[in-house]
Image (cartoon, rainbow over all chains, first blue to last red; front, side, top):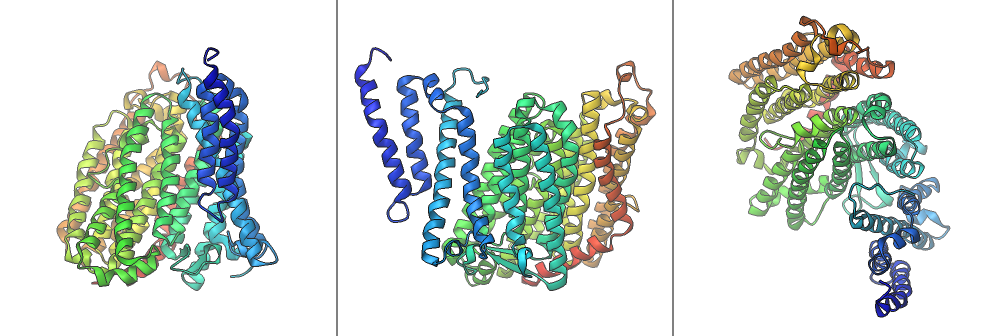
Length: 144
Length: 496
């Protein structure tokens, strides 16, 4: 892609905005449209764009399999962990009101954490699916 | 119930769910095995506590996130739920101990951790299906268990596992989609997804074609997932080519939980509508059940691969369960429910034993197993015990199921059905005899010279289940007692 400067510069220009928009959708999700799933997909799309323009090898270097696997697991753990935390604090499983002294504050915190976990796992899953399908050799295993 | 025990219904599902990502993050086969085993046994302990609680105080609910019942997701535990929970977690516990050696031999080292992650996720999905009282939440768990099952099957020893997995994926997805369409139609009419609430609201709409269509979609969708004849095409290949430990887990749990879903949705939710008797649901079910018992047992006799023979036998055994359900009487239903447990125990024992044979011999084809009884006497003795149970010989669990089933058929004056039940057992004699003949009547060939008895951990698992199929055959009061209670609770909501 060395001979396509417009594409390369355009992509580099766009990627920060895509990432920023994803973060907006993620953290503004409880006030407006959006949420963890959409944010995760948008965040992943920045990496997909990078992989298409700069090659899959570079994208893999930017986002190694080990990191993705960790994010994939961590997201689920954050989600379920929030539920368990509510349970430890004396509420039912996923009862956000129990998370803070004031119920409304707890509900904000709860949905923030849960959506963060969802976003993380969706991002890692989306990029992993893309990388697996984009490999030339389908039998090649991903190595760290 | 107060204190930490109050949260058992949620924890039973959440603990396996949280273990799976930890296994993926650790990526060590031994850590995966250890965690999977610990979680399985913890689930068994929790399920037994839940069962004890239900038997003492009757059904109880847990409200997810503290949201009140028809709006929020309710986890409801009654006798049937608790019984299924115990079956699933008990089989998973025994298989997890066995899995170590079997997985080491059958799956490449860098993918072994994935097997354990999927094992735990599958357990999570199956337990969730059994415990939830929300029709859509059930779908979510159905997908969790199904997706992990497709991966488990696809990890099999050779490439045929991939086609088996893909076939299962396509048919399983069709089944799950039909389930969602059915639930969607019911939701359209009632505006609720809570099972108890649905059961209350549906009778008023029973005359509409929407509700009838919903019932039709649900019966076919769940029928696909439980491999009810003639929707069983995915099952033989999936069980034959899956890794041995996965096959044993699935044979004991996956179709059983689907039968539970059938009972819960078709009898529990649609029971009060009167559609089960107004439409020929039970008659169709009975004919298909009898067809499964004969056709699939007969097919099992001619299979060159014993895993495949047992897979067909599983479809036939689902037939026995559905026959009990189709009788729509307390005894019939109890026979079906107790056979969930009984069949899980004996079929998992058989698949575990064949897994040990696959480990030592490298094949489960009947010609490769000539004289194996002299080389692996303990393993093959367990096969014999579980096989006798499959036939329904007295003092085994199979006898308890068939006796109760015949009793139920005679209670309803259906003596031809009772005769057919006994006649189909003769077919089971034929396919079990083939194993006995090959294992003991022949001299082991030179290719079996190096074959030794199975490792101790595997033998232990095999014999725990084979032993259970005798133990609960001699003293069936507890299993049959719970099954009768579950049948009573379930039939309360069914209109005559």
